[in-house]
Length: 310
Image 1 (cartoon, rainbow, N blue to C red):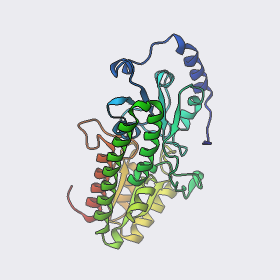
Image 2 (image 1 turned 60 degrees about the horizontal axis):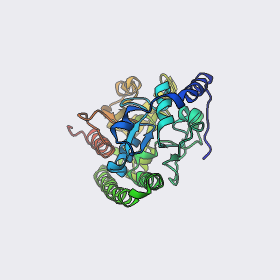
Image 3 (image 1 turned 30 degrees about the horizontal axis):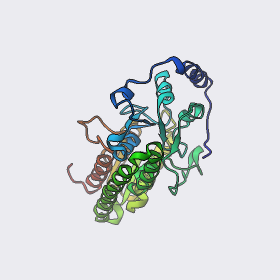
Image 4 (image 1 turned 180 degrees about the vertical axis):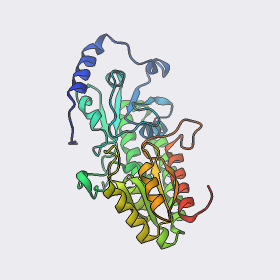
């Protein structure tokens, strides 16, 4: 799969240094804790790690490069990250231009590499400098994640064929849960009046969810690439909220909601809450798993748009 990459000389040089030293370095501790023969599967962010872990079960140790709460789009890899990649048995990434930072060194690592979004019908970004490029947030559709699961199941079965039957069973069971979450989401949102069926967020990360649930999507910026929103972007969001009498607006957990608060101050809309996209929460938080994330976001959206208390 071809991907657009913006090279950073420093990162490439860092990768070369770590790769040169990899032969004499020790594997990450997680390999030992998972058992001598258990393969290590490395993903680029926590959402993918949870999805993969549901398929892997007890037959692999699944880790995320980025930590909980990290901003994914412009993450800066560390030497430790690259060492993890060198010693992994399988690397999974989302693709769709999400992890351009990872593509800078993964091609140089002699480890099987699978793009889990392969086969998903991508939606294009509609505006800004990214117009026409695929929206990378395909995992925000539980239907798309069923495709992810098939790709992960195949990759794990290639890696550890002796456990292929377990991977297939785990994947099928997880797909049943994904379908149930999708059905719950569509049923709940279908009860909203037409004028309330609009989802206004900071980033255009909800295109797939909005499509599946029959919501009109509006956002301040298309992709989280700017340090702050422009006055024109904020004005466009305000105009949309006013014109459609949108009752509530939202923002993602990994970005500042300052711009969206300006929309709230200029309209009759309320701030409906924080939504999760790029990262899970800690185990005791609101979205420790992907299924929790989708359910939490759906509940927050419904409560915000209907004026119900969470």
